[in-house]
Amino acid sequence: MKKLYEINKWLVITTLLLYLTFYGGIMAQIVLGIVQVIMSVLILFNYSKLSISLKKLFITYLILAISAISIYIINLTIGESDLSFFILFTVATMLIAFFHLYITYKIKES
Image (cartoon, rainbow, N blue to C red; front, side):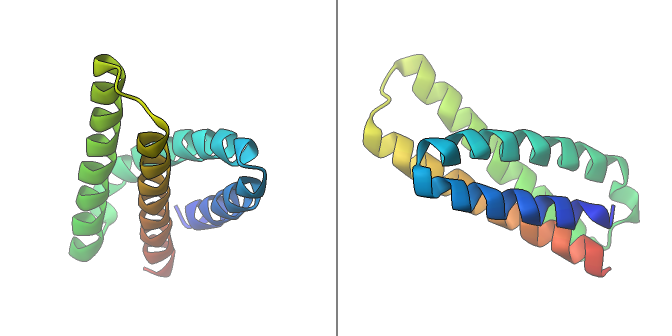
């Protein structure tokens, strides 16, 4: 699990750099999200090995990620997507990605 941070760090950096092209950033953020979901499954399989503080951080991350996915699905269902929602959602999910990066950093340090 120590390598998760390095993989995550480079994907976040790549995503941020590709946001200079906007559409490249959006595509990279989709890849980043998929990889972070896979990493989260790996972390779940090793959940018992985490310290209590890491467990709390990870549970908080899961709540935020599931909430973001739910909001997106609800928004798609009611058909109220506009540019402001898209930008806000993109920023919010990127902040959640940074939080995941922090968690993988803390795992690496433990």
